[in-house]
Length: 358
Image 1 (cartoon, rainbow, N blue to C red):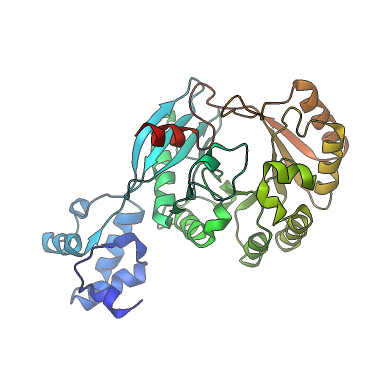
Image 2: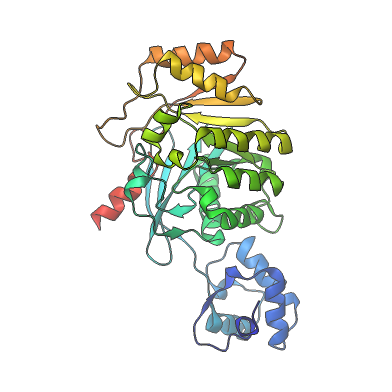
């Protein structure tokens, strides 16, 4: 870290959560204070989640005033919260610079899952996704990702009487396009000095960026991997996910083979079956062929429509065809029914509505 960052001689206030514990300790030493003050501040920021320096009650008043002079805590704010009849909670989350992202709490009888965002908007332009209609503005910072999880953990305790059990990076944005910040956030979420959650309860869902899937394997991450596939035929996938032209299925499959060889972890495929797009026997046959190189699981997801356009849920016969053929091929398959149908639960839907109403 540059000396000027630690000395903070400029008038500009810095985001204190951008500093590591060691950097906080160094800051206090440079100010003539004791290094352990950095440990105390770090605990207040990440374990206790305070939003102001005044709340750091075991620090002397002069120290709190000094911190307030030099730093800010750029916490998020829930701008809009929607609750579904099925218990699903959708949050429109306002960031410190006024931009908006979404997070979702999905409850079942046995667990609560947080679906969190990694970017403001998305640059991948998937035709079926409401987030693609929002301009990609910027990557989320580690603390902004962490805050989404903390808020949903608090909502889980308040509304369902139990802490958050699972996290999936399946909200707005492509998490691998914000690789470093997502991994830093996961480090904080899993750290005993953060939320202390198990990495095995975290799933990163990607549309498929081959080079970065390989990097995850090399970095020996402990969380799970899911791929939003939706078609194992290049021409079909490119028509609904245009970036597939740059990252074709052959490259994706090679990267996933590398992932499995390095991690030995089963791969989950997220897959929506749409009427007239991927609802034929040839689509299922291509999916089976794509999956067979490693142990895998296919989640057939009921589509949450964002309008009355070309993407409509396929009929039950198509889903039954997928389920039967996948099971006969020895591939685990689960049908996931849509949640939050009575609210703006589709990814990007609430953000679109909130942005357009301002």
